[in-house]
Image 1 (cartoon, rainbow, N blue to C red):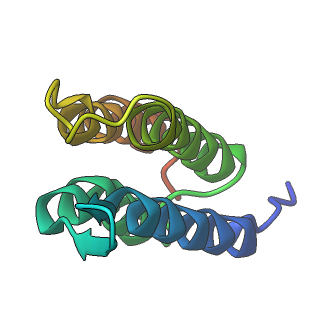
Image 2: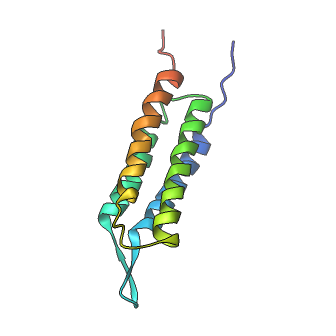
Length: 120
């Protein structure tokens, strides 16, 4: 019998870090006195991790961990670049489509190769 490691705890930590990245992306400067919540940015960055969380029960083994790390890496790269290095009000819209493109590419591949075998 082959033993498969359970990476769900790491997956939940990746989801938590993705929620933190979504919070960082959604709190944008409001003039010079405070911050406001950009709901579209929050939804765009949080959606891949909600979908990844739905796949956490059907994916097993290293595919669960690898797909989560790819999603987190792509999201953090975009959030750090767009929000902290060159913030311009998200005018070029990469914050909106890159995380969604990453989830559309990564999760079907991970599900195809790493889905849990059905119970017999």
